[in-house]
Amino acid sequence: MAYTYKRRIENIEISFFTDVLKEYGYNIRALDLFKKIGELSKKSGFKAFIVGGFVRDLIIYDIKRQKNRNINNIMNGLYKKDNVLDIDFSIEGDATIIAGIIKNEIKKNVVSIKIHKRFKTAKAVFSLNGRLLTIDLATARIETYTCPGALPKVSFADLRSDISRRDFTINTIALSLDPGEFLSIKDHSCGLNDIYEKKLRILHPLSFIDDPTRIFRAVRFEKRFGFTIEPETKRLLLQAVSDGAISSVSGKRIMTELKLILKEKKPAVYFERLEELGILKAISAELRFDEENKRVFKNISSFFKINKDFYLDIDPAVFYMAGLLFGLPVSNIGRILKRLNIGENIEKRLNLIYSDYNSLLLIKNSKNLQKMKKSEVYSTLKRFDKYSLLFFVLKLFLDNPEDRIIKRLIMIYINKLSKILPLIGGSDLKSLKIAEGPLYGEILNRVKLLKIDGKLKTKKEELFYVKNNFTGSASVTGHI
Image (cartoon, rainbow, N blue to C red; front, side, top):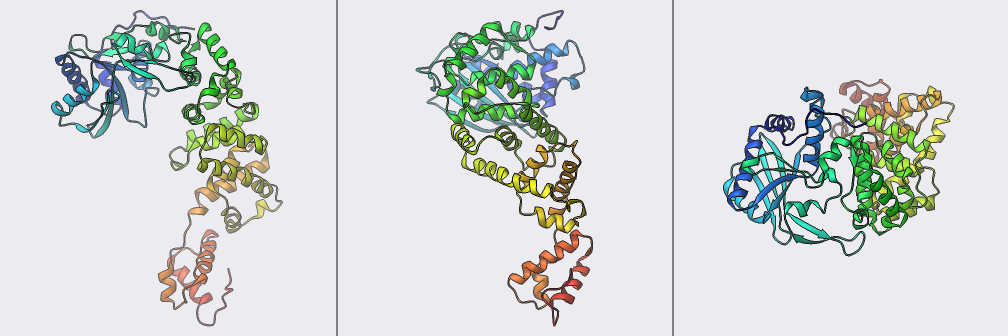
């Protein structure tokens, strides 16, 4: 159901805009920077506008603010890219000229400015309050496509023409930086109305044909914002899928869109919609998203929501892809990975996850699982990659007692046992007159296992153990 509001937004209030900038960690200088760019543009006979996802999200959350005045409750969904603000500017005129003027006039906060004269674009990076802010400047333009899935041909135009090349009306809204109308809303395609009505609408009938990746973005925006794809847009989307538009898109571009979906809070909801609209099968006839996929996706989402700060070196997308393809015939998986051009490294990792899964299944079904010493758990699991172990855990049914046992042991291994190291090293062994060679590895491994079982706690105890078991007449097969 659409919201009902007392007023329609005509401009973004400066106080709200400032609060948003502060939420990103910037100070008032960011607001001053935008004003200055607007002034410099006007002085040059040009007009500057903020466009894209940042404007869309500002408006969506400004509308929510009318119902809830607590700014802290509405900031979580604001448009962020790696927690750094990355804003798109559209320039009626030549963006490269403005970039050059910025470089000369705003020297203090400029980190770098890269100008691409061929495409009439520029990227400016600023440092404000100790944080980076990136502005992508593009000359207002129109794009035409020679065939579905191809890159567009570009010619330059005004803002009204520029927004016509965008994907959905909600992404066409601009904020003017002109000094006389600073932060006023420019809406040439009823995008504001569609935000109020919570509808997702394309700008023209050939939109999904011109760029079929918009099919994926339709699902992403619909589910992220709780919008509805309006009937005509949905009809055209289904028609494009049915006509094979996705087959014209490279695997790399499709994978880029899927990865963006996998970064959303609840990817299962998005993939259910991809399945419902026939998009997965349009990628590859073997792809599906059933209840088991949904269960695993939910496990993955819950796990990384709770543990995200502890597994910064882990890419959740690998687990989602492993969960999506799990159970399919090997030949089908190979075809899908080839279609998606997923990359050799990820393909190897997925293959390892699947091969390790069967080995871990045998361990889970072992009768001696509960009786294992910690050192035995370590010795059993150390040959497995961390991705393989975590995926196995995320596939488990935790209402099953055996599943709970193996999960507990794997998590103990990952979070504790695998991180235990001897306090002594090669130099210590050398000082005990032990000849260098393979024996060093054997000794250190034995010390590690004893530490894992709590039998050696200090460096002094480790040295004493080695001295008594591996020096003089002591047997190389010293006791553990």
